[in-house]
Length: 180
Image (cartoon, rainbow, N blue to C red; front, top):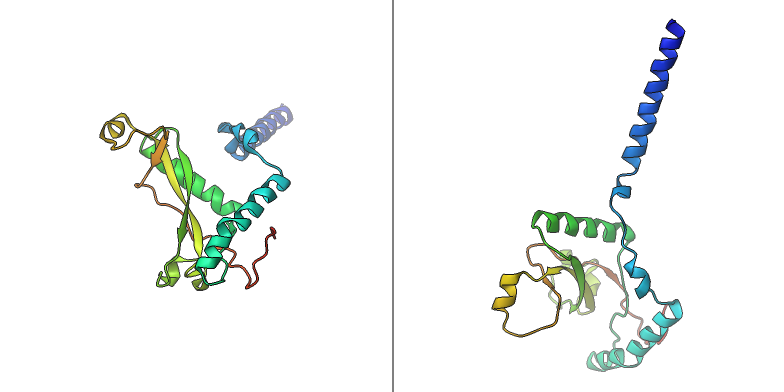
């Protein structure tokens, strides 16, 4: 009798541990992933066309304005930084009961006197950068106060901090028209 009781107890304990492990390891499983991004994927070749067009047009103008010194043409965040920022935005948006939350990517430029601790590297002063700004669906009262009629669905959320300090590519002296 004791053996079967001990076996039953151990079996139940093992089953409980396995169930607990499965539940704990599947915390991400509870949040379904939207696959609408799949319609927006482009090939490396299509990206190359966009990069080359930017290099041929906009970057040429910037280089001329900068007295022959080309500006940055790519920016990099680690996946961990992106995942962490997305989690931060989601948590804060949930607390504020915001709907249709997104992230807008803005172009910017570091002023020459920008604080060195507010850039990924001090030598980025004077280069263009990007920064990420949370957005959400406009609230009804915001639409009534709007000065212009816009079809834009989301608006910036100033109560959630933006993200910058990306690694960017200050280009070499000779501007290359190809992706790295």
